[in-house]
Length: 88
Image (tube, rainbow, N blue to C red; front, side):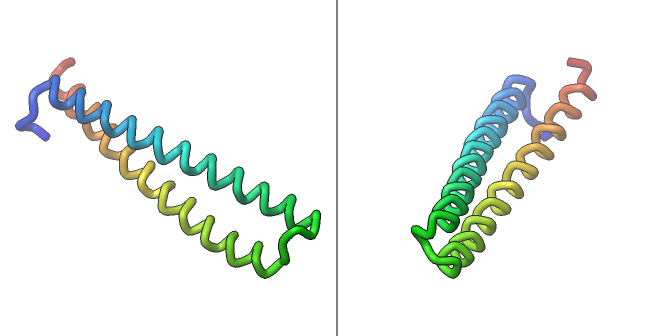
């Protein structure tokens, strides 16, 4: 990242923040789906097995998005550290 200019670093940081935003929204949608499924199980609209398999799939998706958010956070922190070391 040392070869990038300050503007390029800022643009890179902005794109990483946008990625984080998208993945955080995806996590919220997944949580809403899980809560909806719990309501459906209690109302006996879907079976417990259906809920179990869907819960596993949704949790896998949730953790994938969580890992991507963490990657973006680390990259943004590296960009901020680089900008700080340059005295900006």
